[in-house]
Image (tube, rainbow, N blue to C red; front, side, top):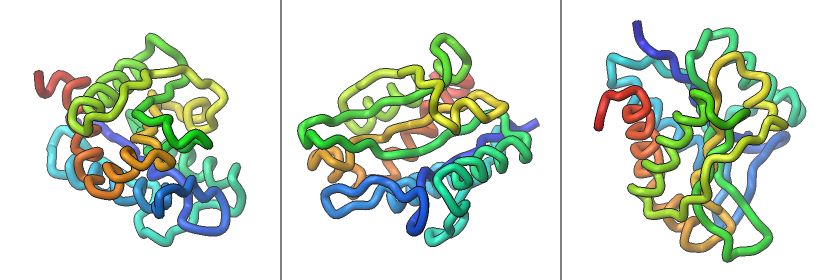
Length: 189
C-alpha cells in the first residue's frame, strides 16, 4: 500500500494568509512551485501517493488566516494522509540571517526524524546553512494534523544569497525534500 503524503504549499497568492516577500520574490509562489515539483517526484514513485493543498497557483484557501490553515489540515486529515509536509520560506528583518530549518510538534518523534532527513538533504544539495530541527507545538499545522507533520523553512527569502537559490532552483529544493523522504523510509542509503 502506498504511503500517503500531503504536501501543503504554504500561504495564499492573495487576500488572506499571504506569505513573506523579499528580493523581488513571494513566498506563496515559491512554495507552490516547490510543492508541485515534489508532487511530481512522489507521484512517479509507486511507493507513494501524494496530494497538494493548492492545485492552482491563484487558488486561495479559506477566508482568514485561521480558516486557511484549517482547510489545509482538514484536507490532510480527511484524506487520511500518513505524513504532512508544509513548505515555507523564512524571513527576517536582518538580511544576513540565512539557512534552512524544520519545525515539528515534538522532538524525538517520527516527524522529527523525517524532518532531520529532509533538512540534511536540503543542506547537502542546496548548500544552505543548517539551522536545525526545532519543536514548535504552537504552529497550527503541526498541532492539528492527525499524522506526523513537518514544516520546512526552505531558506530565507529576506537573504539575497538564499533568495537566489529559491528563485533559480526550486526543483533542487523539491528534489532534496524527496531524497530526504526516501532516506527516512530506507529507500536509499
